[in-house]
Image (cartoon, rainbow over all chains, first blue to last red):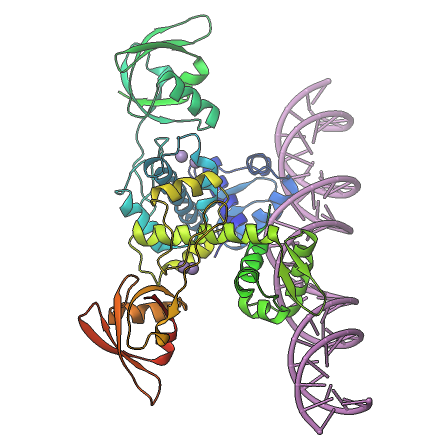
Length: 217
Length: 217
DNA sequence: TTATTTTTTTAGAGTAATCTAAACTTTTTA
DNA sequence: TAAAAAGTTTAGATTACTCTAAAAAAATAA
Ligand SMILES: [Mn+2]
Ligand SMILES: [Mn+2]
Ligand SMILES: [Mn+2]
Ligand SMILES: [Mn+2]
C-alpha cells in the first residue's frame, strides 16, 4: 500500500506528464509539490523501485502502467469527493479542492463504490473534469478553449485552471458548466472577448480567462 | 495543529479515562493503540508539553480541558461520519468504524458543519453513541445494560461493545437501536436471558450479550 | 520490611520524509 | 568547443514516530 506522500507524488507526476505521455523532470515535480529537488530525487527512486515510474538519472521519470492505474484511482476518488461536496453538501466549486486533497487518500474501496452510486455514477466533477471509472477508464472529450471559438455559439464544459480565484470570478460573471456562450467580438488590442451568456447577459472577459474555459460546439 | 498520531492518542486517552474522569496508565494506552509502552511514554511527553494532558511520571496521564475539547471534536467527526456512512451510503453498522477512523482526521470545519446539517443534526451515531455538538456538548442519557432489566419492557438505545462480530450478531437475531425488548426470563445456570423483540420474536441471548446492550425504560 | 514481580522510563537505534550544501552532469552561451 | 549556467544528485543532518534492551521505580508478596 502506498503512503500518503507516495500517492501525492504519483498523482502529481501523472498530471505533469499529460496523462502519462511525456516524461517529467525533477524540478517540475519539486515546484508542483512545493518541496526541494533533493527530496524529489529521493522519492522518485522509491517509486521506481516499486515499479510505479521508470527513472533515468538526470532525465526525469515516466509513469508506468501500474503507476497510471494507481494515479487514476486517486484522481477518481478526488473527483468523486469534489462532486459530493458540491452536489450534496452545497459547497461552492472553488471550495472543494483543498478538502478533496485530503479525502482522496481515504482507503476503502467499498466507500468509493457506494459514494459513486450515491452520486448517480457521475462522469465529470464540478470543474468538468472526467471521473475515471473503477477500471480507470474515462471519455476524453474534444474540447477547445473559448479563445478559439470566435463568433461561435458553444457550451461551457470544463475549466482548465481551477484556482478558487478564477472559479469565484466565473461565478461572479455568471459562467458555469453547461452555460451557453456566444463569442460576440474579439478585441485586437489585448485579445479580450465580449461574450453573451445564455443569450442574456453580455460581459467582457480577458484573453487569459478565455483560454481557461473549455467548450464544445 | 495536531498530527494524525497525536489525535489518535488523545482520543484514546479520552475514552480510556471515562470522558476525562480517571487518569490513564501507560500500558493501557499501549494496549489500546497497539504500540509499545516506550512509544507511549514519548508521545505522552509531547502531548503534555502541548498542554493537552498532564503527565506525572510513573502515575499516568490526565486529560486537560484543552485536550478534552480536541478529543471531543475528533469524536464528533468520527460519529458524524459513521452516521453518514449508514444513513446515506447504506453501510451496515458493523462496517463503519474502520472507515470513520480515517475520516475523523480530515481537517475542515466547514465540511463538518455542512455534513452535520446534511444529516439533520443527529444526536447519536448508528451505535447509539452521542454526537457532541460543535461546542463539545452532548446529553448523557441514563442507560442501563439489558442484563439489569429483568422482567421489564425497555427500548434498545446503544451498544457498549461495537465490534463487527457483536453487531452482526445483533442484526442476525433482530436487535437494533430503537427496538422494544422485553426480558421474559433469566437462566440461573449461566445468566443468559430469554427476550422478546418488538413483541414478536423470542430469542435467548448470553449474559455477555445482555451486558452490552444498553436500554432505557 | 526486604525481596520479587510488574510497570514505566531511558538509552540508543531504525524508517520515512524532509532539508542544506556540495558535487556532479547536462545544457546553453560565447 | 571550452566556459558558464542551469539542473540534478549525493552526503550528511533533522524531525516525527517507532522499536528493543537495559535501567529505574512502584506495587506486591514473602
Ligand atoms: Mn481538485
Ligand atoms: Mn476538480
Ligand atoms: Mn466507531
Ligand atoms: Mn460509533
